[in-house]
Length: 69
Image (cartoon, rainbow, N blue to C red):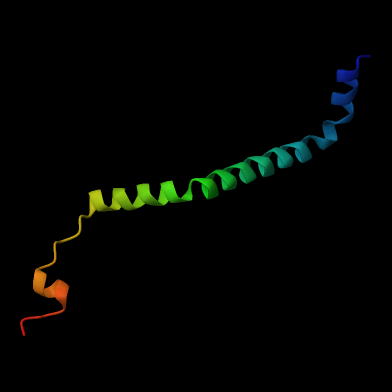
């Protein structure tokens, strides 16, 4: 019996554990990716919101705090 077949036969009950470990590694990798690219992703979200809902231009008096006085 070869080493590979012996290991795969003995590790069959550990298969769900291996799947959980793979899922945990993937989630950790996704979290690290999101933390690393957070400024870029937040900028993309803000830009897309401005494309969908552009801000209305303020008048000069409203920007200076003068409201018709």
